[in-house]
Image (cartoon, rainbow, N blue to C red; front, side, top):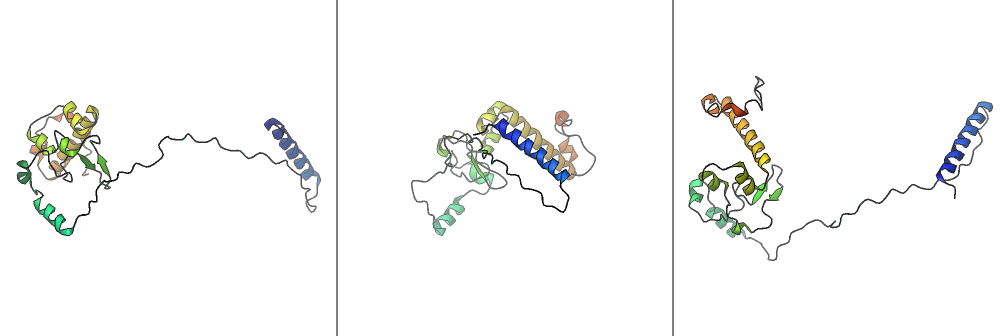
Length: 195
């Protein structure tokens, strides 16, 4: 079997011969066909295999079929306002509530389990509103509850305050928007236009 360099030299020689022949042969005559040795097919290197290629699928041990009557009863028992749930059982059993800390739901509908290792009923803090009622928290404490870093909590806080100020100004509530210290004003300079 010819080496790669030998094959390259053979191809180069054939090209030179073909070019020379094309210059000598009149246009009306057919060009002789030159046999080129077949090159070995290039096989790409195998990709690195990931150990656990199976998708992670969670299955339930029990059949959780719910009848429409049971669903209606559960919806009727579910609290609708903060006043309804403030005196409710803790840890909060309503995992589907938007204030519950066990799950996050993205705007596209994807569900992210924040506390994979624990059962929702074993969590110490389950409701974001309960945490807010207890007063201010440090970035580290909020990060520990939400399972994010201190820096990510700071970014979320900055973005939320900026969005709140913009909405307050849009509604003509500058007094409330300016009540906070202006420490974050340089982060998002006002462009002078409505956003």
